[in-house]
Amino acid sequence: MKKVILFIFSFFYTFFLSQTLSSNLDKTTLALGEVAVFKIQILDLDGKDVQIAPRNELLPFHFEMVNDSIAKQKDIYLRSVKFAIFEEGKFKIPEIEVKVGGKIMKTIPYEVEVINTAKKGDQINDIMKNKEVELNVQDYWDLYKFYILLALIIIAIIVLIIGIVKWGRKRKSNPIVTTNQTLKDLEKLRKKNYIENDNFRAFYIELIEISRGFITKQYQIPADVLLTDDLIDYMKNNNAISQENEKIVEDIFLRGDLVKFAKTIPTREIMSKDFTAIRDFVKRSTKDVEAENLRNAAAPELSIEEQSKIRKLK
Image (cartoon, rainbow, N blue to C red):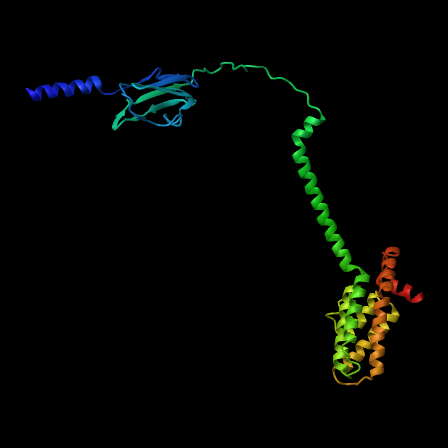
């Protein structure tokens, strides 16, 4: 008898005093963008806690949330979710798990079909007609000022780079710069006291090396790779160097070759004289460059032989 009473009590508690979960979907067929409502209701909570997906995360990602409201009292939990779908097809609302106290319950699944109600050939009208707006200079400036400023900055950078490159080339190729640098090199040679110590071989090797480098830069003559005889012939045919300076270079270069091969021993007086002659030649070189530029500007159509005759006549 006691067992029968216990069974009746358990049955009554389960069906009349336990929580009741229900769900409802007001439409199962929707047009594109049409709003539908999905509701979940739990009765007889008796103050128990309800654990369910957070707000706006209850339905799958295809369902665009319009509104997700939750109302909870001691004995009732009500959740109403308004949604819309903007893709054609069939979409499922799966079983949703709800935990009430220590008990887990699930809603029934639903399937929603979304259809496009627009027909081919239907005219689509704007809600509001397009309005023409006249733009003034300030409006255009506000719209495009970033692009204009960016373009100006790029142009300024390009101009700056071109100017730096040209200035650098001009500075490096400036005859005065080359002359001053060579004079510094000659001064360093003088301070080595090769002349005072009768170290004539080292003196002429360095003197001719400095001279070859100077001629190469100042006159664009390949003096750094030509042998002495070839260099002398090249200078005479090129006519970039005046006859006076050609004579100095020829005499000193030939004497330097004799000294390097130990065929002659110069005196201190000769070495000092050669050093001074090369230094004076370097100082006068700018006049050669200026004269060459004038000849090229005045008579560009003349051959090298004709320019040489004109120079000799002068």
